Image (tube, rainbow, N blue to C red; front, side):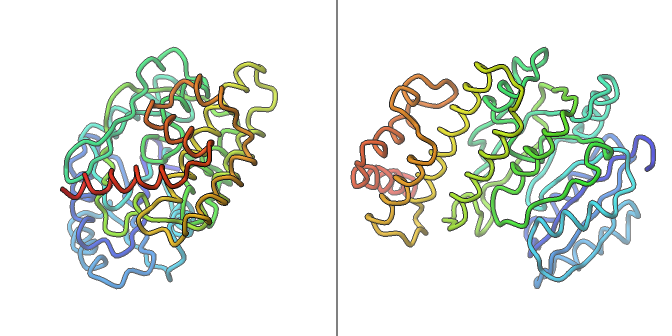
Length: 328
């Protein structure tokens, strides 16, 4: 491993419209000791042409092609090619602040940590939809605090040491692979530091974005995440463990409901009801847990309560109203 080098892993798939901006945001970094590993997962558009144009001008950019196997397979292949002491995962349709690498490597070296967690913003049509930053986590990097602040679920708001990622691999799934990866990593008990800066911009506009699409695997993946977290929490203080699991299962349930009511969902109302009821039964969520759970918005609580009361038609109508407002 090359000391103080950051290996940036960027999986690619039919990214001709966005990859230029992603690479340019890396070229604009104030920290220069990096390598960009572009792993093309079987693109059929002009992605390769665009990346190779950049590669010809800057030898820090590496391009590799593999037969389409999904984003997890692409990241796993890229992990086998890193040279750096540190690893940063970036998506090919996102951008980052010019100081992301310089500020995060300084923080990880100063704190002698295994992972640095920093802030990010989600964008729709170039406008900020929401953000997650480690405010209040500077002296409290407990799992409870990080989960409450939505800082564990993604890859792109973290700088990792290559050492802590040794033997780590991504599950072959179409959704939730980031969260599964990080939850598995937590079983190694890594030292975590935070950086209260918003340095990454996640683009929700991507054509066919999984954020907007129904997934038949979502409930299975959410259950798997919950089971892994339960193992991670073995030995934790009982009260902390209870609070973390309560928040996690309520957020998972919110994800189940959102997925069931996607505009692309093939489920009819009866199937929606059965799906949601099955998951409520699995998580054993009580009314009082919904009412008193911190870290969940009033809007989310209303959605959860309506589903808990089997008012699936009412909930569906609310989603229809919300979609109509967005189209106006």
